[in-house]
Image: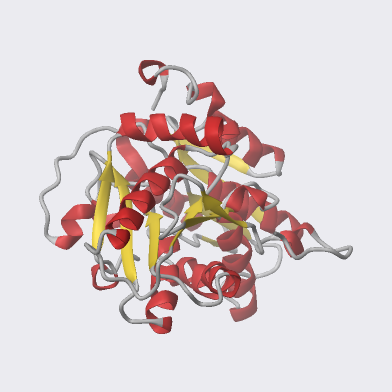
Length: 326
């Protein structure tokens, strides 16, 4: 549970210390635990990097008070940065591909940020280019750039991973997380390997994404409906270190859709597609540890449920698979 039991001065003080909850479909011998990141004030794991990156850049002078933060983002990072920017006297501008969640874009605007859309077909690559163009046109403006900024992974090394290890008394056998920027998994993996070098680390992506190519595997690029994880352009995923990863698990959209519905119906988790993909990959690894196919230092698996399904209801995540929009 959260540890916030006293009055707090700022919404930023509520970020982190999210609950760690067992996924009941996991084997009794090797339980899976998920960090419920929708408990953050901006309702996603990206609140962590919003607060951490902006504070670090203010501290080291990269960002000056009253300045402007410009970030290419699929949505949740924008919300996390907007929450932090509003409390730290900073302006926020976000460049978002059109196809991403309307709810997220509305929330960024509600938090006082400006949202600029780029064509969906141009992907995150064009959003990144446009963000840097805008930063060059403004005074006192920076692009934190979650896809390449080491502070992204550092935020999870310093907060997410230690919280998990404290809750489980250090007994973590495997770390599993979907990769969009790769920051969440990289931060958790580095911390995990410091605790035990044989900790099993797995990246999760939808079928059609190309993270598997980092490990020298063939992957066929295709469109996918799962949001928030995966990549079509590995050149933008500068944080991903394949030396920290034992496996990349690809999950088909149809199975992810079924798991989203199962998690809600059977376990009360109203989580989005990346969480469902993480759940399926974690359950697979837990069974492999139980069956002796993976040699892990402890009989447990940890993952993250990054955000809530409420942000994707307009896309039909709880309707039929065919009605689910990407």
